[in-house]
Image (cartoon, rainbow, N blue to C red):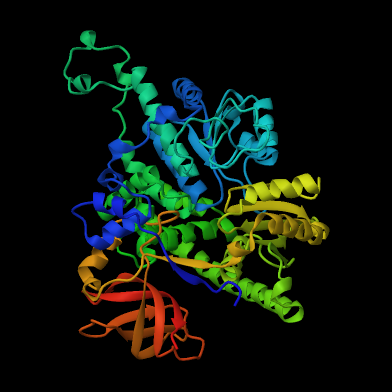
Length: 604
């Protein structure tokens, strides 16, 4: 069956596993298979972060921000309408206020009226809203801007200074901004290319703090303790100085943006995410993050990265997809817990609406592909699938593309009409490993100049716009590029596991260790094991889920397991091979081991 995964075990470098002494043998195996070679790689100490000074463009950006602070100029943050952009915007606003910015505000493009990023139309709106911007004010983009040539030009023409902070891949030319901070610029020396937009902004704030410290912006520790000095012995500028801010208070937001944007969790990002999760578990998260976790029925004291990725991030993203991302940003900016709870409830309601809308669109898309397969056969299925339904909600097409990519294991582009009376279609793309989407779209643009009106993104996710009448032509060219660049074996879905567990490893203690041994996420996946089991009994939960009791060689008693979405009216096989994770089932104050089944196969 197309897209059905094949279980394959990760290789384990035994020499690396042996270096990780003092850990549970299963943990040693898991870490070694993910490239961890030393205990320092799992220590996650903030002192181990890469130095902010290594990031290109930060010196000039810090100078511009310092000038704006000294001049009390207007500063406007231009964010993006996803969770990374929202958290990055909140980090920027909170952080700059910590440095004494009195006139900092934010603006975000509306997905339905402005499109993506810093556009001339958005610049005009911001100029009208903030008249001081045109008098040497400062625009700072977050999670966008590296492709905003027209928007940057419009801002500078009005007298604004522009700092672009972004992590997206640049085009052939860069906008004429006053400073650009992006680790993915050609030649940038920053060792990690995996920072998200929120991470780039946090790093800029770290660099700004060091820059301002060197410039005497902050009161020294000694002077802060000498409030009783006579007036004639004090520094006349001391009243303007402030305590050096603790930027670690922003790490819960950095963690959220990093996990939600699905950037690779390399060592540097794991340090950031781990530090943010520790703040959340210690009860020191901002009011909005705490409220969103509670709205999703997650205990902040036991929060892990998947809670940010599957509970908090989607609620913020839903606002940008269906309504206004400012609801999410305001939730992350407020320190009023009651207001945060109200906003979190509103975001949860929008997310429920998004789920219903998505389910209907995914069903339509799957039916369209299945109809194609019935008419033409599996061999005729395009390597690069392009779907177009004018009536789809273009704020949700990315989720449709993601679901179809998972189902059929090939790159998918889902398109919808812009819905603004024009003939424009907007598309969102999702890819499989080994097929770089942005490079593929650049190739499409080279082969068919003018076909794409705009495009941009990453290796695994991208966006585009084109005329509705050109979607069929785009589908042909995109599929041709995909066929050339994707080998047939890459279309075989593989489910990588960490091998089998011994009967003695099925313990609550190991499940707890694995839960907090991450943070797990993109490019550092959660431990997944495989094995053969006998189904003792099962029952259907909530119409589509299965709760099972499984037995295997060496088990003293059956173990509970859950298979979400695994019931289609057919009972599970009595003997099965499963890919599963160890999980802790918490119910009525008790905790016990259960298996979360990710995939099952019948054993004859």
